[in-house]
Amino acid sequence: MIAEDSPSVVTEVSDSIAIVRFNRPAERNPLSLATLQELKSTTSALFSCDKVQAVIFTGTDDIFASGANIRELAQLDSEAALKFSKFGQDLFQTIADARQLTIAAINGYCMGGALDLALACDLRVASSDAVLAHPGARLGIITGWGGTQRLPRLIRRAAALELYLTARRILADEAFNLGLVTRVSDHPLRTARLIARECLQ
Image (cartoon, rainbow, N blue to C red; front, side):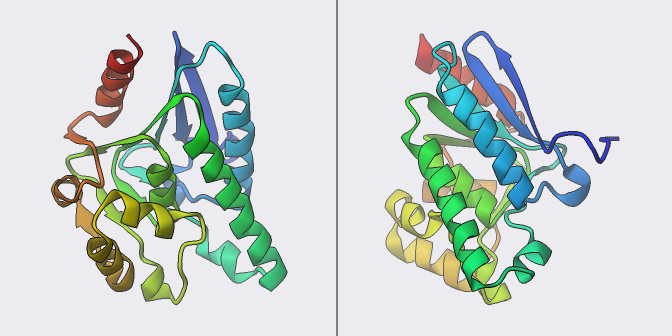
């Protein structure tokens, strides 16, 4: 069991590959403001390290991440919500612009802002039981962290619109057929490591 006072983001570096793991499975790994702040500190350190050549993002148990904390969002006024959205946009753009190879090892549920994070990565490897969605339309909100721009660039515009407007959940095989994920694997983190090693040779 993970202690409540443990970090929500943990990092492991082996050789030139860093693993960044979301570490709140009991809460479904929400991308709360505190988690995003930890992620910013973590990625800033990794991206400025010459030794690190690849960064892999993954989750815990069967959850990659569940996006923004809806209860937290509900407490924000318009000014705070704008700042929160801008913070996430800037952070994910930093990931997209990183000189290192970035891979999302999607080990299960990947929802909302978590999908935005995966879209900011260079490559995406999904577990065979992964579930991906942008559920905002069902909640009366829309993602504010760049996914609305990146998804249509990655897959067909019509397919991206359908996923956003219906908030439909898709499984790994459909995500692969759409071109949303690069590979489907029963061991996404292991596969992501292998891809990173191959790319860095």
